Length: 260
Length: 350
Image (cartoon, rainbow over all chains, first blue to last red):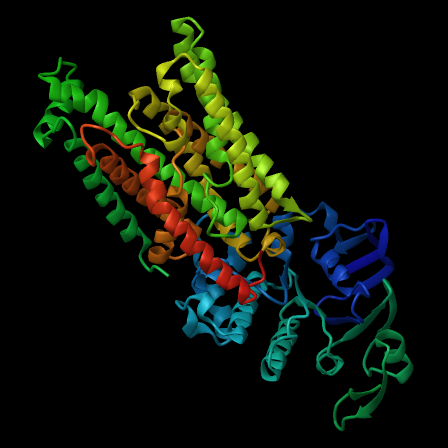
């Protein structure tokens, strides 16, 4: 469980986030949404520990994140970003093995090899092990990066909760892969992983999310839980565009039709 | 990329041994395998040597070939580490000021100590020369690094341009010191700017080896973290790498070994550029494998280059830096072109 208490962040005297109070329950799928520049990426960086709050605290399993070092954090949470560029040729397996770096010092142990195998099977890239990463297509490369991130958290269990942070992970991918990635993330929430994702597509978020947090102008605007009551006034306020929810039969969520 | 990296290492060790034996054997005074064997035996038994050939072998050829091999390894390994650090294949110690700064520091103490009594000169050679080379090397490297760094990012274009400027300052400083020096060896500007192994001695070999062994051990321990850095600074941080600490650690270790080698042999450019490039084609980009194989390959290539330097216009000698630059500069241009092509493809780094 992650608890955010009175979080503030400013850079160059500019306030980016203020008075953020959040509780992210364990094994939940939390989605953070907001317009560009609202501060959601900054919030994710703070949750990942790559930025330090100007004021307030973030507690990860009741431990103040500021007291954890880089390696301790890396053993607790993984972060998937949008795009990666690798300057030198590595094999796919070498890239995925990076996800185990926080867990061994020089040589990977048998368990690290096993987890890498498992992660590659999950993403269906087990045949690419010896392929050069740079030779992959954009979609394959993103799958391999997801594998690397999975390798970091796949050994989570009830005694050892882990966190998966997704920073707009699907924005450049085709539809099938977007849903595949969301499904795998959802599966992980049943295996002691808490997922926190920044997504732009509200219709991609609704089938998977347990909670939707809307960020506006550096503040937490509102939080929604199923059944998600997404109204015209909400999307106008948060995204600056009106909308109409269309009920989808036999599901607990609507389809959001945007109308300018 | 390479399934059996151990085989690559064994092959390279074999090649290095052959190259070193050939480098010892060929020269103004040819030395046979039998003479090598016999003189080693005599030294072990603490007996006096039989002839001039054995003396040439033990006092001149062997320390020269050893110093050359270790220096080649150092420059290549430093190239691997710097390229990993800057996430770019066109960086090497000669280009970012390390070598020129070290040469300046070394020439400073070299010229200054010429005025000291003889026993102090020897002492300064043992302690002050490497120390000043290190100080010169680290100042130049840190200057280039910090000046090229803007908004949390090191632009490689800036890095190379500022490298040119700092190199020019260091080289003109070295040139001035050589000019005012009374010592005939220090007066030879070409020695510092183009490098030479003609002055190799056993104590130089020992000092360089004493520094290189622990530094290479520590660098090898950084290689996983250096791999993670390929993903980017922030992403490496997500994998538990303390990137700032890692950068300073690698810069210091690199500079230490490059500076000490440079103090004794002068600036030898482009080895740190060509060798990692060749080895990446063979063993791939994984720094765990790349670092030791590049060290060995650098040792082999510089030994061959030194052989060429001694034999091409024998009994005269070409400064070795001329040979490495002649081969290395075209490789640099090719790499630069490739990198520019990548950049146009929107690779996302500058």
